[in-house]
Image 1 (cartoon, helix red, strand yellow):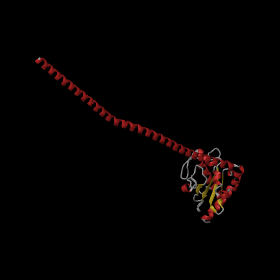
Image 2 (cartoon, helix red, strand yellow):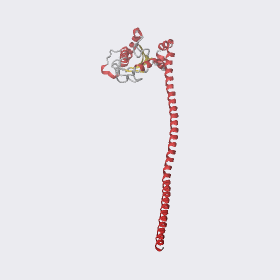
Image 3 (cartoon, helix red, strand yellow):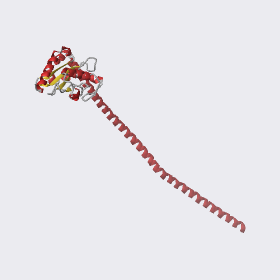
Image 4 (cartoon, one colour):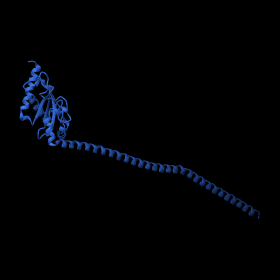
Length: 272
């Protein structure tokens, strides 16, 4: 038997085993593409009492032709806050760890191992650790996201029909609309803040301009006064000097006249 035939036969058996196992129906489901048995698509239902509760997580398992002797690649398409979307996930049952792979493991073992890793906080390639609140938001928005994927809708019509019957589609849409409305509100607030900032800037500019103009006028007037005061002082000094000179001249005249009178008096008494 060729490797390809061995791989196909093994995967066909595993698909039948999953279809017959009723115990896992509320945990996960998986099936290959009708056109490519090496590409499987799985759906994990978020476990209760975890941040993933009510979430529906769609992903892919890509098997090599050497399966079950070599491990597959594992990816998750639906945003979860735990794994990077459409990126290969590093777990012990993936192609990241071929040295630890066991041919006895099956598709069911792989998905259960991924689910266990999902509910832990271990890190590795392709994983992330968003907050509990973010993961809950992703869980609430998971089905609206999945419904946009034509492969998901085609492969899992029962999940789509069940979801639409419960009326949760409108509920999840409301959550998304509320988030958009919240973002719009933030944008409006940002616009108001910008407008207020502009108004305050204009007011402050006008006030500062008025204040600066007033200050400049006062300063100019004061400066002019300072410039004019020395001139007034000089004029005052000139007037004072003129008055002093006038007074001095008057005193000289008085002294001269007094001297003449004294001389005349002496001459008069001498010859009388």
